[in-house]
Length: 553
Image (tube, rainbow, N blue to C red; front, side, top):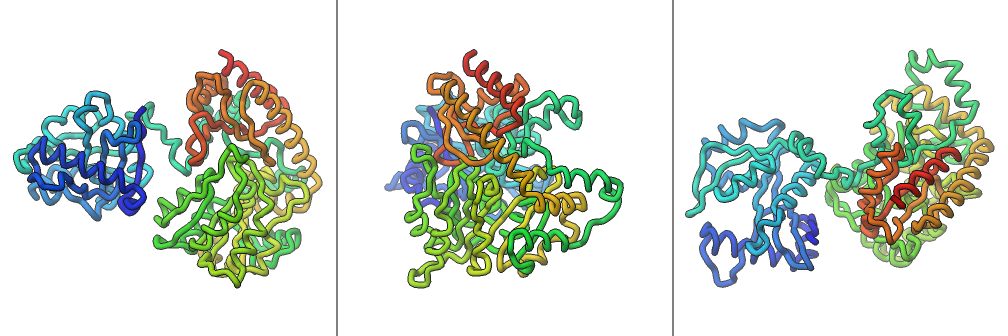
């Protein structure tokens, strides 16, 4: 089976063996086979690409593709200036800054004819799309022009020679080609993919939505507290018509009182993603080194990799260990990092760690050398745990901790969008939050939700009962079910099923059940990993019926 592995040249030390195999393959093809370069004694030819996708079979390189961003275009060195200007740059659908150059599409001659080239190009296309690329340019060897055309490249009428090899300039619109190959390219593998495919099915036809079981996103299965609904309903016209308080002063005051946090240490915005996108780029830069868990909420990896562009260290947590954190190893590695980001309870595993306070204190132990200047803890699901102790209580003590709290999931406010940070850095970060960032109905609902904990505790208990029931039923069907504490369950498909997570999700979708493919949510998850959100009791019964039918069909 062919595996397609992406890496960057900056990671070459960790991929030295593959780099050496690429240099050998490039020499065999471009020097020996095509005569584009002179032979050399080392029989090695380094590829000048910055990004690589390697096709691997049984730990052996069988092909690769490399590509560069606009800072490192190489084809300008070979393409006549007039051709490059008139037949390449003039065809760009976006800006030159969002254009990528495919440098090499190379397959070992023993493996040609197995569509490995297609796999390499499609994987490169998907990766470039995730980088925000709008256009791809390349120079294609005359012998493989048909292949490039089938993949979606537009071929220039003019050609040129490099040595004795004839090449044609080529161009591709990324968006058009992505849409053309949408059945082959699974964009859900992007780290920031969130599910929500049900909206593609229903649009805003809510009669259709009423017929769907939406268990691929983690929205609350119960409504907001009656007090929140009453105030919004009674002031509905005003909620639509009037601008909200500019900086959510009353909401901040309520959070301060309920959570016992200084108002100066509280920052609110329209959901945790808004806070992450606004704040993390102000706290980190491209030179930062950041440790995150894997699996963990994918938005963090997306921001670190594609928005900030910093160095990421993944700390794997393993299903055979119930996804528990090896705290001593985590602390040791974190001391070498500029920052650490944790989600507790974790998503998608649902596991809660009671070691977070110990980790924070050890990383702030003045007797031990540590460069970790930021500890970001996402506690979106912590309220599901009875008598849970938030790390908010440590904010006044440690200047390097930031606690992120979405109010979407635990307070049934996903559609309204509201969240807050607790940190001594709040005053510094406040200028990066735009005015009116939290809508009037969201501010009102959040205030009343915080004031009615009894209502939510009652509903959390219902969720815990439903999670236990569903876990037992999935186990009886043959699923491996991992222990969790929130409103979702991470599982592995039954060992004897023919389904992968992808085919299982598609089969469920055919019966109006949407569940989450978890394969690409972490390095320790597989193509049998599936996550279920807990819904209301009626929907949960229907969900189990559908799952049973799909697995046993």
